[in-house]
Length: 332
Image (tube, rainbow, N blue to C red; front, side, top):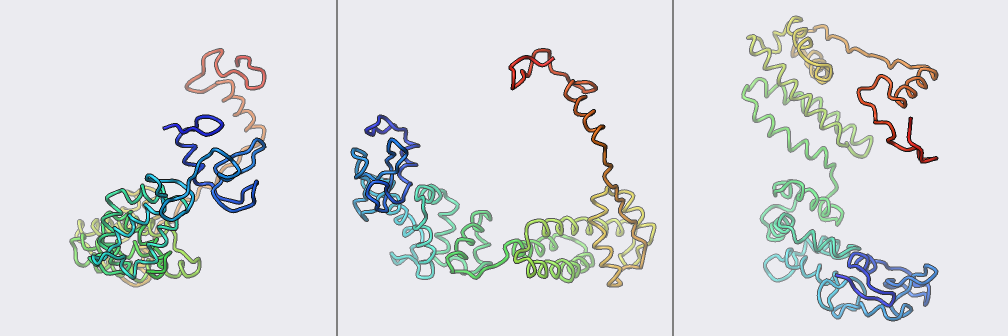
């Protein structure tokens, strides 16, 4: 819907952006909403830019985007938050007051209103406010969907309601017991559990302590290593052997059947199993390192010319296409 200002009509998108610009007015020097733009690029308030209108909230007096007739977006957002975080007594749950203040104080209330209109965060916030889950990391993590619960949990950490936690380590610690429970062989579960506790988690905690955060890559790699290790144990079981009875032939067969990335992912488990005497000392085939082959400057220029002229390529553009950007003449 277009709106009309002294200069003429203005689209709804530009109007909404203008309602979110705050600063010191170039005309009167006061800090307030600056929807007006002067002839030389000055930012003007509604008083200095005459005819723009009055955008003060009739409830709180704050200038800005009006979500409803005369009511600003912050007041509407506050109504939504108080309704969702109501503990059943008509008031926001006392422990969640910092979370309510954090959401209501956001710079762009329109974003918060749209977010709280979705059923996922609404259901999670209501469950937390009514005490349906413990006010802990584990409790919030049980609320579906996971992506929304993790985001709200991060907001609660920022608000000081929950203590800080490494989210990547936290998610891995919640993932591996469920994954391990799906493995049918009890001996395999026991071996993999020891590998997770004494190898993966020890390395994760040391890395998180040294860097301040574990990061995304390490848990993802560990998940891949665990799946491949479980496959190796299943392969031994098919041939009627346990990990303690593995032979060099079993190891060579596993490396021959696996690709390069699979072999690299299996090596940490094999080294750990041998160092802890859970399998015999065998020779782990070394990785194949292929150093990059450098080309000369002359060879590189030849390749560029070949591609530019279309020689030796599977497809060549038709004559006259791709005009030159400098002279606007067709390429030969």
